[in-house]
Image (cartoon, rainbow over all chains, first blue to last red; front, side, top):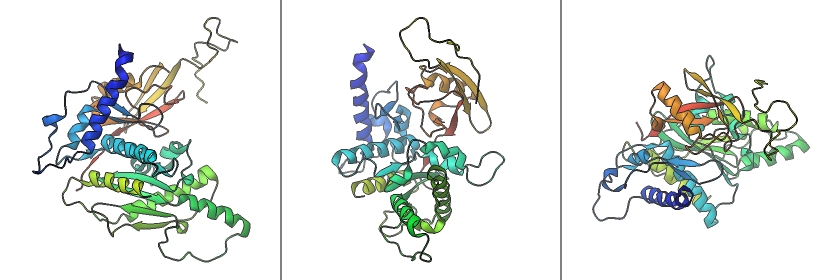
Length: 261
Length: 105
């Protein structure tokens, strides 16, 4: 019985969750969305998406409360939504399979939580997170960051370009002086997108340091801080107008990125 | 490195019974660590890790929905995962993290 019931049950829950994530239904009057209204009877198991494979996201019934108006989003919801969007855009053909690499929302926390008795970045804590992947193969590396009860997004662009640059440099050694300080769409860069419009230079520095360690550790390749630009995206970024919506904004940024990479 | 040599099959040539040629050890040692505690578990490779997570939460008086278990390869453990589905090795660590929430501040 369990075997027969399982697949349809899962997909029913899944679509329900998706419906919630897309929530703001275009209703004439603003109805405060409360989970008590219509989130349905409790599920006894978590929704797991996708149902097989790596990097599955789960959402529990209790997570639905986080979708209520005025609530803060949690990592389950964010991860589910990112994962779901990723699959959707791949299906629509907007994204190539390996174009974007997503880190878990815990990546940045694990990286920046100092190891016991030590200071600074804890590269070892995340060293094996990419043991089966090569982040330098992707055009975009997306790092959702949760810091001090706030969500924002870090995107590393054009890492694959670094690789090429490195290989070509092998032939002719280092030539030119410092790179021009201009934001070209080709340049490898760490970009912060934050719905509060706050500069995150510390985060940029941390991610650069991680990339330098990762390049060295996984590829034996030397990159320096100057190979990577850092910027806080300001222009044209929708900002939040309340104190609880940054998670929603983060999802929106990722959505836009994947629609039009 | 961690040679606990607990393998029920022993170093013998082949399991006498059962047609499976897989000499994979049936049990696996897993360390579960949060900020201040380390707890060791020994479970079957096919046992859902939910059991282990529930046991850890109960022991540490944690609410299961407010913590996440993350493998050393950065995978979040879901209720249906087993050591097998996550390719865990003997002696692997699960790191316990708090639920992340964010609005602003």
